Image (cartoon, rainbow, N blue to C red; front, side, top):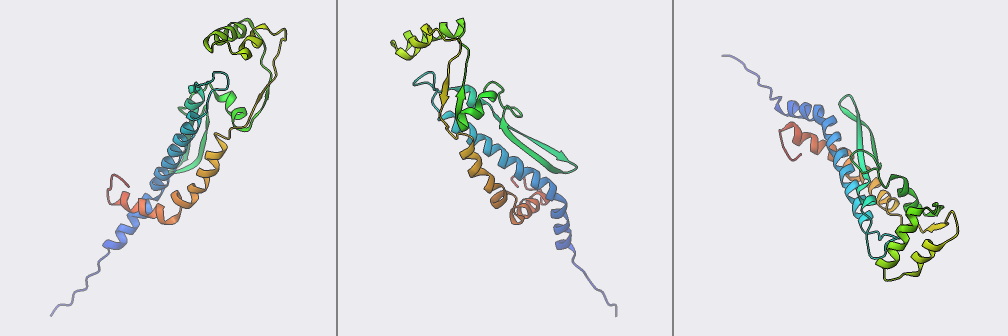
Length: 186
């Protein structure tokens, strides 16, 4: 009579495959979080009204948020989210911070600004603010911009989600297991 012993190691192999997939799972989760954060930033910027053209929205700020992910080895080492980052537009980059936190700016009064002010004066059916800009004797204006928190409010809401929902051990393991099994929507 022969004696045979069988050992089923399929579960251990699945767990090992999941562990090997963990860096890819972290990459996917981090990328998903960053992309959704940028979507929220663009949505937040889209809701802002242009301060210099009443009734119109400024598209430059909406196009400026983007993200990059730096990887070291198999894993993510740094995520950068901001204006003018990655594929985000560069045009509004220098104005994004003052729009978010508010402040005072001092634009120069140029011939081009005066032409714009006259254009806006007639376009807005003679809004006196634009006539004042067009006729000013000043070389520099003082413009006070109130804080909108278009960036800060989104960041304050999204950052805790990175650790609570995206990069907690349970979620990383769940995604890694699905990736190890060949799941496309891990």
